[in-house]
Image (tube, rainbow, N blue to C red):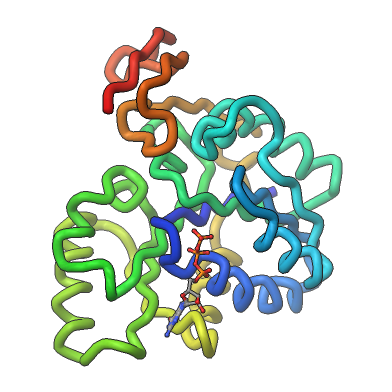
Length: 229
Ligand SMILES: Nc1nc2c(ncn2[C@@H]2O[C@H](COP(=O)(O)OP(=O)(O)OP(=O)(O)O)[C@@H](O)[C@H]2O)c(=O)[nH]1
């Protein structure tokens, strides 16, 4: 099974992207499912279900999408295995889908849009900086020069990522992303089927003020983290 995390700030175009990506992956006739981290609405998961895709919504626990993801990643994978999925796509607007170099076997996709302002790429944090692929959307409503400057800022924030331009309305560019996903290795092949995870909780936008258990970024030990606003 392959786990692809699609994260990005609210309204960056994650659902639009997945709505184009899913039919392309479905055409390969390998089963896929979606884990949708959204504690506030069910709009997106209904949209995915209408495409014939099994959907799991935030599996248990508290209201934080990032916390869902991190604390339940193994549950997500178990669910995916029970469903016999080949691809498990997760969608989250949270900031921490891939916040640790310990996470292995995940293809991390960050979605960011051209309208977010030139300072946004450097402020988005690990979600963008540690992404394997950065998808930039909404290029159709800015000029060529603005697209180029924004892509330059993304490149500065993450020099290693593959940058793709996708039009969330027409789907142009989604094929290229599908090809990269199809070429990526399975989780099991990378890390014996088992993932480690950690969470620099201070980077989470949803849980400010809470105390949670996280894994210390440097030492790898579990500890209580007081999240400051
Ligand atoms: N013009 C244009 N609009 C886009 C593009 N991509 C997404 N949109 C629009 O932007 C809005 C937000 O897109 P969504 O796909 O819902 O964004 P999201 O990241 O899933 O949003 P949340 O789930 O709320 O975090 C919708 O109205 C989309 O139609 C694009 O490339 N061009």
